Image (tube, each protein chain N blue to C red):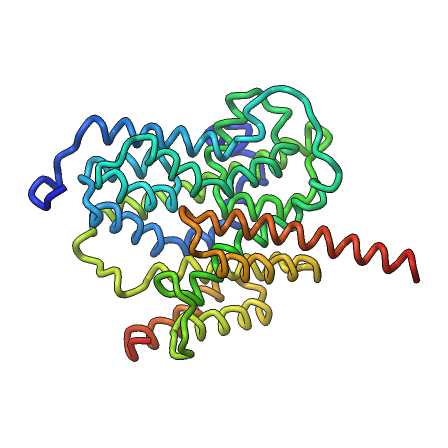
Length: 116
Length: 243
């Protein structure tokens, strides 16, 4: 699409967006779409208690140690310092809000000030 | 569903809203940047607003937008959206036990509103599905509070991002606040050695498998982490039998 028709809306795009909304609903309710009764095997029930922390870690870790698909090769990266401070703050104060605020307090000066 | 009086008047609803508040704060910048990205990647303002309101899945929107703008076939866009959302399929397996008492449509609507933060905070508070009606309504109300707070903050900030698309440079890296928030929640979940193992394995696998298309590294990392923890449980049990 060229920059001149940026604000043109077409019906095809709207239908694809509706399709994506259906995908959201289907994936988020995948295992309870059907009414039929079945039970999870015991090992799967136990295994699922490890899933939430794994999901977060899988999202978070690459966002901290990678840039454009590559592992960063320098320690001069604002994200590393902010993450280390954030983790330390969390375990000291058990407070997520404080983790965000002090973490960004480390991140923004390093990122915007030093360009890390 | 959070617009039902029996849920929003329940005391657990407020608790859900309160527990989600740090997340709502952390994702302000993240949602803003998602809104900015939608417009900057070439969708019209109307399309961006419509997508924000109905799709309600940041990563799937960000994956689908360049494909839409490039004119990829619809099935490719939808398949990409499905793959990026695969982690929610894992979440739905976990949530099944908590929701199966509901009729199908309310169940699906509840599922639709269940995102990463709501799932994680909900299962952190309730390790097991309720057995009595009282327990079930308590859990439902808490989840409704989480979902309501998350939806409201995400949608309003994304829309603001669309409005401010040309005023906020992505180079500021404000979206990192959202990552710090998830990092904080991740720490709050690290309540046993096996859970720490799960986080370590998932983090390493997600980095090593980063080259997989469509964020499939995330699902692969979850599966490997759960597998590693189940193996570690077995090892521990075997050692105890020998001792």
